[in-house]
Amino acid sequence: MRLPRIAALLLLLPVAAAAQPHPDPDWPCVQRYVPEIGAAALWPEAPGGDWQDDPGVAALVGRIAPRPVEAEQGLAAIRDFAAPLDAAARRRLLPLAFRGVLEETNRQRDAVIDQIRRYARRQHDLAGRVRELEAALRAAPPPAREELEQRRFFAAKTYADAERMLRYACEVPVRLEGRLGAYARAMQAAMPQG
Amino acid sequence: MPRILTLLALLALPLAGARAETIMVSNEKDNSITVLDGATLKPVRTVKVGERPRGIVLSQDGRFLYVCAGDSDRVDVVDTTSWKVVRHLPSGSDPERAALHPDGRRLYVANEDDNLVTVVDVERGVVLQEIPVGVEPEGMGLSPDGRYVVNTSETTNMAHVIDTGSGKIIANILVGARPRYALWQPDGKRFWVSSEIGGTLSLISAEDWKVVAQVGFSIPGVPREAIQPVGMAFSRDAGKLFVALGPANRVAVVDVATREVQRMLLVGQRVWNLALSADGTRLYTTNGVSNDLSVLDIEAMRVTRSVPVGQSPWGVVVKP
Image 1 (cartoon, rainbow over the protein chains, first blue to last red):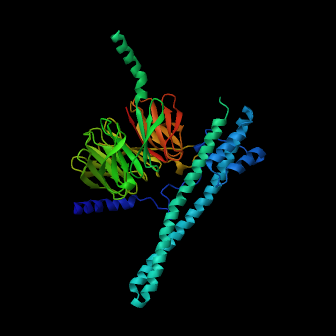
Image 2: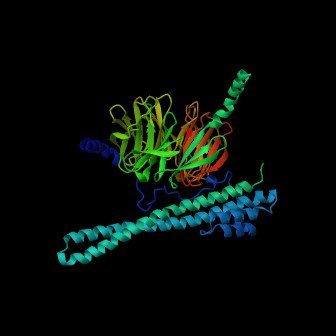
């Protein structure tokens, strides 16, 4: 069983290598890199206008868009915002508010993605260091080994810890997108029908 | 009198048909299956299964649900009467998706971590065969006659056609980047492959294993990187192909004859997999970021309900 498997794999390899897309070494996440969340992904028609011109909308966006705000708090603020508005005001202001949280979320998302890329580059360097230390360890005379071994151990540990952190960091853009979606649905639900 | 009752009962059937079904959804981050009643569209129970459940398949008689529990490296068998995990089936490392042979016994499992498709006998609970394929195998599509199984490998960007008789790969077809799903047309003449990163569908002929057509998508106001085709399902007459487009939050409706994209329907966030209702009037979609199931009315071409399920819903099947 073992040999045929290897033979079959070898047959596949030349074609497989040719089919690889150009990898993005700075993008370590399993989720495909998407540069921004498009308005049309969450809102049926393009919401236009400058949301900062309306003080009420700007205040709502300032309250619900910051990263630490939980979706539940944000949803309550949206309901409170919409409750006193008549149909015409809702039709005008809710798309503006969506535009505002979309822009703010994309800004936060950009910052997180930059951070993820910085981590990924650091990981790349760290992996290189671990390899260097391993090579040095193999070549070193016995008296020098203990110190080198310790340095290799800490470099490898830092790398492994950062890998775990990266996996967590990759979920942050997804969570921001999820919260934005919940806001969008709440604003849609508060829009007058027809 | 009894005759009239029977007639009434028969008349009531078409109404009840669509609604008597059971919908099952795997929740990737909750390690569970949500079971929904098709009539009320309400979750009726949650079944705990192994870690990171993704692909789910029903046995032919609907008595068992096979669940690929990726992080537990096994396939769980859920009894759909007692709603308990009654058995574990062996698999390779990190099983992601599976397909059942028309013989009802051979389950073809794609194992993401060890580049193998395992063939499992679901009755005896043993691995019959291991077939080496490309890197990160995922999509599994069985031809309607059971002669071929198509496996897609996410990193190798290929569809591998396996002869189920010999267990050997007979064709490797290059498709768009990160192919996720393979679906045969009911006539067995062609199959479709979706590519998450390529953002395309490839249509492949079973006559010469060549790509005969490609379908692309674009949505104004949505970055092209967000258009990630994954799950697919045919309409009941196989005239339309529904395609889940991931974080574009759309289901595309493709005309199978002309290969034109007819509609783009807004659903929940990161739509991944699809299932048609037993009567063909509804499409159910799992949305991994909004943690819900969208119910699409196929005639009206719009979402009529969004039902919250578990965390990161992934697979969906319907038991009539």
